[in-house]
Image (cartoon, rainbow over all chains, first blue to last red):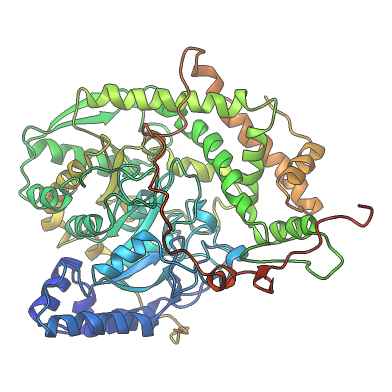
Length: 517
Length: 99
């Protein structure tokens, strides 16, 4: 089989071929490394999904899987499959920067629990993906190392903060990726690149070894090109971890079973609520059209569709942009230039505090500074009750909206984002416009319930991907997969497979010889 | 409607231990004003009798047995330090000349 065909196969197919001996894990890994060398390029020209590629480590991990297979060992369901890891997750054998100059070249002394589980499952980590600095942004333009470009149109953003992970999938550089979602950073990039992204229930996947953005909102999850692949990855990384005190000590929902069941295309008995408040003014016509098609399709497959009101969702954005910066200003206080990362001005003439001020002023980018300042303000005496305190009450109201809605329906749906991918540079210095990308995704972070984005077609006006956002109750992550798999199979005929089959061919970049360490 | 002065921004930057250039102070003053103007709407809906939520799921303290277990070695802990000396983090002077 040609390399072009190999990199387009799903993770489940690759794993089956590796298990049967049709392909070796080394062969599969090499094909993806070649693809990265061909299209990833530099920030100015290529996709630039990766900040670091570890060819040697990846090939060694793949060889280990091949050796185990030869020795007759039973392989896991994703053994030998390559993966792109968001650079906010610590790796003991690769630098971890969180997209920040303050952590440039930082080598963590330990693996995150996610990293460990991936390795234990025989998944081959190709490298670390680009992201908005400390996961703050919706476009990956806030990376200190240059933007990532959307494989559908290299002049446009791939979403954020996990734009590196979504672009790696859409560019066929990896069949699997890991993202983290604080306000939509898995789901919005998935929507604008025509890929699948799932934010599990808060506490469903361990946060141990994830560089914290906002601790009460952060949740890591699977990114993939197919719903079944996302489910398989979900079940590898999810589950209780004693090293994370907020990790849920309960069985992981049967997401793989749900994905397989959903592929039957029978949704009879499922009650679906369309959230009235997440649509209308401010939503692109092509986004609404594809969303309406998807809802019609759900009903055609037997689901009972009703309109549901969640009156406080419209306050979610405001509450989020008080709660998140408050937690960020506290979490980023650890970057003090004393124990790790950048240190500026340590020349014998500056005090520790001056070095701290200089380092943080130099090392943080514009958005990180903006949010640290916002959080410092919201938490300062005299303003705490009016801002942070009020925002926490809105959080309660949003959780109650979900509770009321889920007493009537099994899942809620909305578009994932109000628009398709916008041009790089368009919103970079207009924070409020940028923040509105997360309008639909934020409520699930505030309430902690499970949510996902699935491809649902291309907008008529620009031919760019649109995402269907599905929200399920806490610990009902399996419902997302049932709905996602049903939609995927329903549209597969029209799309000729996944939506990505409609994407233009990427041509090898001018800077072909990407340096692979 | 909040209104944030350049001096207030400079004060916040000091609290956050972050040196900002003069043009950054000007730029941020305008942006913070705009963002805070947009988020004050949280005050419209949240009545006094609504309890605050600090965490999405009910959580309680999680304890483990107080047993020794492997941790980072001093070498590992110092490996990423900007400066280390004699098995410790080396930091710039903490006290000022007058102290």
